[in-house]
Every structure is written in C-alpha cells, then in structure tokens.
Length: 227
Ligand code: SAH
Image 1 (cartoon, rainbow, N blue to C red):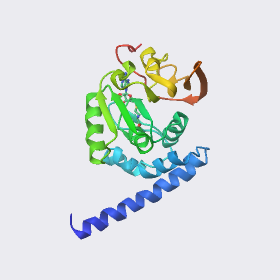
Image 2: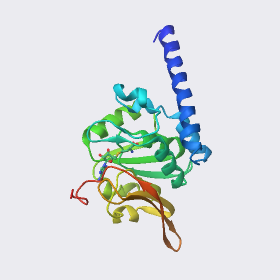
Image 3: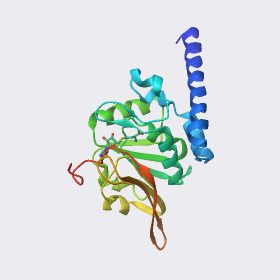
Image 4: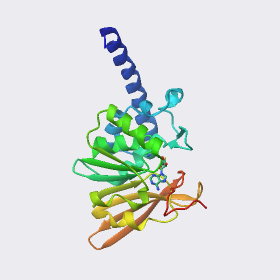
C-alpha cells in the first residue's frame, strides 16, 4: 500500500472512531451500560466493516439493521448490554449462538479469552469467518451447525449468549454452562413478547432473572421447528 492510501485509510478510521465515540456516549453510557471493558470493546470494533457497503453509512445509528438472508445486526445498545450482563473477563470462555455477521462475536473477543460461536446459515458462517480472519482475531472459533446443541467438546463455558429468540431454554445449552457461569437468552414468541432472560449457575443451583423486552429473529433448527 502506498503512502497516500495509508494516510487515506488512517483518516477514514479516525472518522469512524469519532462516530463510535458518539455511539458509546449517546446510546450506551446514557442508557447506563458503564462496564469499562464493554465500553472499550464497543469503541474498538469497526462496526461498519460488518455491514454490506450500502448500509455502512448507518453503521453507528441507534438501531438494528437488516443485512440480507432475513438477517439482522443487533442494535449497538443491545450488544453492549447483553455483553455487560454476561459478566466475563480475560480468562472467560464464551459460547455464542447465532454468529450472524460476527459483530457481537468480535465485541466478546475484545473482552474474553476465547469465544466459540455457532451459526446455522452456511453463507453467514462463511462470510463471518472471512471477515473475522481479516480483522485478525485469533481467539474466535466458529462452527457451522445448530447452536441449540451447544458446543459440547469445548464446554463448560463461563458465558453463553444466544442472539436469536427461543421458546424455551435449550437443555443442551444449560448443561454446558459451568458453575459461576452466566447465560443470556431471549425467550418468547416469533417476533413479539420476548424477554431477555439471565440465568446464573451457582454452587446451589440455577438463578433466573428476567431483564427487559427484546426483539430477535427466531432460533431455528431441529430442536426448534418453525411454527
Ligand atoms: N449476533 C448477531 C445477531 C445475529 S441474528 C449480531 O452480532 O448482530 C441471529 C442469528 O442466529 C442469525 O444469523 C441466524 O441465522 C442464527 N440462528 C438462528 N437459529 C440458529 C441456530 N439454531 N443455531 C445457530 N444459529 C442460529
């Protein structure tokens, strides 16, 4: 790359860093997500590079976006809030169900030791793999398949995050949550009446909390036939 294009690239990155700063201040801190590690990750991951070219101008806006394959990239605030609820750190092993474009995966990988993510749509899995490789993430492991089965050979996990809505909590996922680990999962109907649920496995059993209403695409696959 020549000098001109290098400078050009750096200027473009700086523009986006300013947009990200505004996103973090106005959408995330203002809504009370205050965990420094989460804020730093949201400030770092280049969200625009996870979107097809024609949507990039909207990358730092306050909402989810459709990105093809009946597929969405979650609202920045939801990504930040779910990440904060997971209560993970540099030693954590995290399982994500629903890689999608890989944006949430990258945010997790900025904080956790290792991130394992499963996607059921082959094209999305391939595209996320290429993108995350290009961004040089070394602690992300991707698999194509039905995530409601989890990723048993890599379990137990300190955090499990499901980014599609299920009618009930998949048993296989619960089994793969280690003691002290936390799962966040949207539970509810096709597109409405969903609540984000937080489940923590303590020494003495599971503790379940209902957090807030959300709207995710449905979890599909053998364990979740479409209704
Ligand atoms: N994590 C994404 C959001 C993904 S949207 C983000 O950062 O924006 C939900 C994703 O879950 C879709 O890509 C969908 O294909 C995937 N999905 C749905 N059911 C699944 C299943 N059973 N196993 C794995 N992925 C699934």
